[in-house]
Length: 312
Image (cartoon, rainbow, N blue to C red; front, top):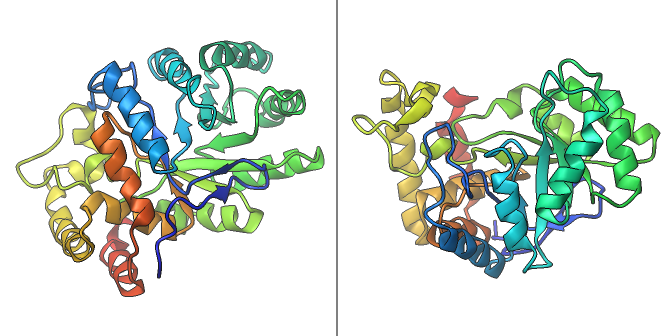
């Protein structure tokens, strides 16, 4: 199996094309509550974007909820200098927000970002009917205020319903952003991955490195700080299960002159996902983008799948 370099994929049938890898800007101008901290510096945020673009990575994902707009504002500052950036952000359907709140939130995100290539729900709205929100997104799409419509954290049934709602209006659903990695393979068994494939909806994978679990930084006696310590695979009784997987990733990576992270990201790309690993500096962004040129053998992909069946 050959690596695809910086060839592009389409987000659904939206016409928006990106490399099969993006960059997550959660930490840009923002300290994550998960214990990641913020980016190394404003200069390193700029270097992260420049390194990504140099490798053909144009999708940058943020959200209004990240630092109460601070991440959006920083992405907007940097994206204004690079017309090729596809800016993705998310509307937060807080319980106190009615459907009529969406247009105003969109305007504020546009003011911070300058443009929006992909506008997503951050999570499934619980107190406002999804069709009512989708109608407002449809209007924004037809007016050219957003380039594509996506959702996030939708299960298979919710995804199918959103797709059908938009299809009735002749509008494509571009993507569903969900957690997916070698240590979180739920989309393969809960129907989300299959439904995305069936409907032609792109699956954007957040936390594609298992919140750092697949980088090799953590293991027995080296647990992360913050609330990540409560993530199942980081708990004291289970973190030892990562060791054989990290050893396998290291073996595969060494064979290709790559890193564990690159091998883990390439595995996701081969499943048809578009991973969006976070990058706190230019070095991380460049290393993540190296997954695009990595060519894993079929046997290696199968070995990684077999080794991580406990996380399905």
